[in-house]
Length: 100
Image 1: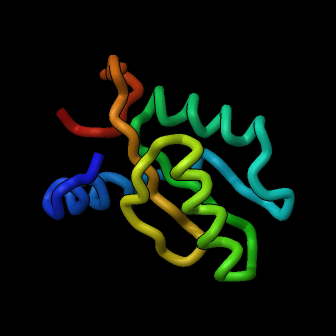
Image 2 (image 1 turned 180 degrees about the vertical axis):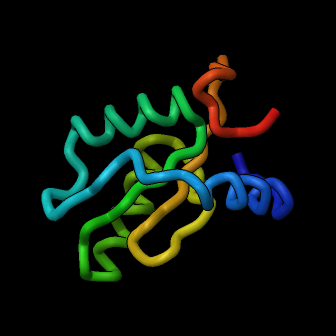
Image 3 (image 1 turned 90 degrees about the vertical axis):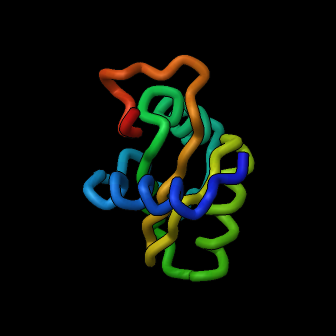
């Protein structure tokens, strides 16, 4: 599901104004957190995730692990925030953050 540069740029522009809907703390990735991320991606397609972990390498590992577990693409990482995208099979136009 590799996106082109223009598609990523459009998603970054939309994602800039989003608030984080998932917070990952020191406990790391739990089964409940992954399920909630899956639900948020199904509803919104584009979500912001905040990682409250100070170690840069551990944070980067968690970002890549979460994106793999949720089959999502990392659009952008700035500091402790990651922007994840996964196209919905049946997009809900009321909840989706992706312009159509």
